[in-house]
Amino acid sequence: MLKQPLILLRLEAAVVLSATVWGYAHMHFSWILFAALFFVPDLSMLGYTINVGLGASLYNLVHNYVLPALVLAYGLTRGGSLPVAIAAIWIAHIAFDRLLGYGLKYPTHFKDTHMQRVA
Image (spheres, rainbow, N blue to C red):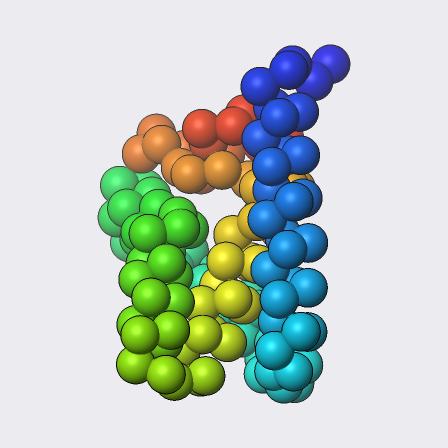
């Protein structure tokens, strides 16, 4: 049975995903670019082929909102639409993962996340 914090985290992710996709559409960015880049952050899981610690570190680096927020800020302040589009796709990916219950990883096992132990 889901616990309240997990429900709230998933609800939060649903709102972030919805708002990001709405904003992406509102800005008339390319849906081909969206489809091409949406799963690129998951390439960070290749670190797990070396060891769990590196895999968790790379995954966590790419699957939190800090880096895409910096890319978004850069795009907004420099007037570049490509960084804004990339940041939106990246944020949408992270929110999608959270909505599915995939959280930041602990260095113990790929399935150990800040949200739950993934089945």
